[in-house]
Length: 141
Image 1 (cartoon, one colour):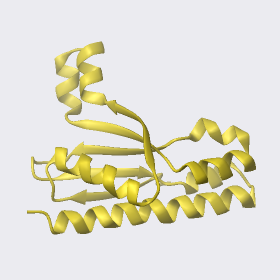
Image 2 (spheres, helix red, strand yellow; image 1 turned 60 degrees about the horizontal axis):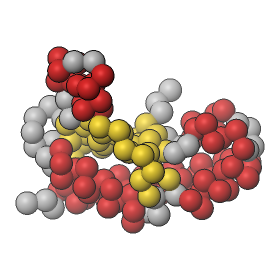
Image 3 (spheres, helix red, strand yellow; image 1 turned 90 degrees about the horizontal axis):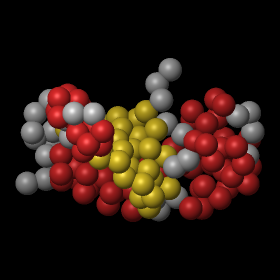
């Protein structure tokens, strides 16, 4: 089972993070949390662990309307929120990988038709953000 949607963009890491935030905002998502995994590993483990993971950020994205609908359908879904989006450095300094949780994962955990509707909407929005990000990366200078 795949549980993420993934795009590789021809952008340096920092630019990919910026553009990912913008693409998510265009789809109604705000960033509730941000975890700099490399910095966290450096602080809590050691530099070797930090360098092994490399540049890697987890953005906790939330669309309040979708979250409200999901929680109204099934309050337990709060354990799956927000939608995590990962931006990490690719194989070289000029590429980044962006991965978003596939909201259909929620549907597999719940049989509710209302949850399916919310997951479908979230899926459409996250895919649109990734698509826009891919297009922006192709036109990057």
